[in-house]
Length: 137
Image (tube, rainbow, N blue to C red; front, top):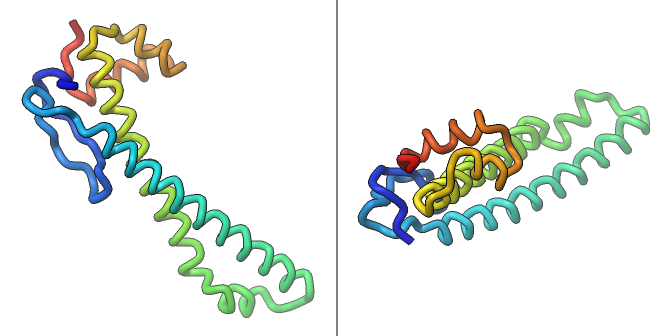
C-alpha cells in the first residue's frame, strides 16, 4: 500500500530508516516482524531478569551480603540488558504504530477516527499524524 507524499520511518530491525511513502510501499510487515522479534527478545530478557531476582532474593534472604550477591549476579550487566531490551522494543513498537497511522490517514481516516481506533486522545493522535508526515485530507 502506498501512503502519501511525505517521508516516514519504519524500523526494520537495524534502526529507523526513512521511507519515501509516495513512491514505495511502506514495509509495515517488515516492521511488524521486527516488533515480533523484539517482543520475543524482551520476553527472554524478562524471564532471565526474573530468575536473577529470585536468585538475589534467595541469597539475600540467606543472610549473604548484598554487595557480594550483586557482584555474583553481575548487576551491572543485569540492569543494562533489560533496559536495552525494553528500549529496543519501545522503538520498534513506536515505528510500527506511526507507519500504521500513516497508512490509516492515507486511507482517508481523520485524526478523530485515528484516536478512536487506537483508544487515545485526539491530541495524541494528532501528534502521531504530525510525526508520520502524511497530510490529513
